[in-house]
Length: 373
Ligand SMILES: [Fe+2]
Image (cartoon, rainbow, N blue to C red; front, top):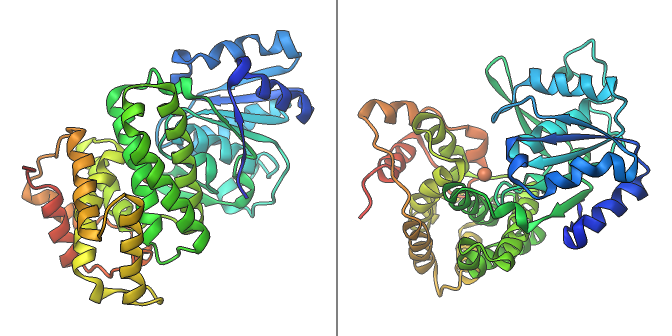
């Protein structure tokens, strides 16, 4: 169940239609600070005058949003009698908007995280402002409660409509543009080899990989066609991880971000660049119930999607893509490796088709953080 895609053409005519057709009278706009750099801000500035729809803005949250922020958003949603939500932003704005939707019909006297989710029909429209997270296509949201990461998951929070507006990528800083594209590429690759993969998810993965590779140059040149196609590719990669979730690359990347302050997609790509060749060399440690031969065939399919003849070439291709972006490799001290190897979420490792023990993870982190040539 994924969202209908609408375009930004003709001054957001399809968005106008969506708002009119949904019959909503009071929209909550969940947006991060990037909105002030985007063309679409003018649309919201004039919305009330043009369509006579009340607008409540909510941006009182930070990256890695807190439960308390979501709680505030739910309170505002109720006080202002909002009847629909539009989320404009990257992963955090999507996470907050999804949680506000899910919690909007729950008992405010009790912790929302402890209550059962009862799906509601509050319309949620997403406008992704990066071509990366694919969050607009997934049932997952992450928020933090008392310093602990909480994963919220429910099909009903997948936005029913996604507005793809390539103009949002025009002003995205270069480092974010690089790292979000790498995030989408890692989603597609990890989903492809996940033990949870299905024919449908692999079709999404293959399509996303092909689109990312084909359009990356136009995307970095800030051409509208490149930006448009990259938004679509990230969305399709999001559909793939909505089915499979991510694997060891993502399980290993989170601590690199918190320890060294590098962006999520950058960290994920550093991990995948070493994980990929390790897995090809160790298919005998396959834990996918479909077997080692199946896993090898998946690596061949990934290679094919990347325009390569075999998996080894695909690893080189991935490294070329990463090296061309000239991203730094963080400098790690010996004590960091102790922290890193104990940081990995074992649930995500279960999605990985090659079993990894603590020594493998330690070895991989040493490879990931060694100086690149
Ligand atoms: Fe990611």
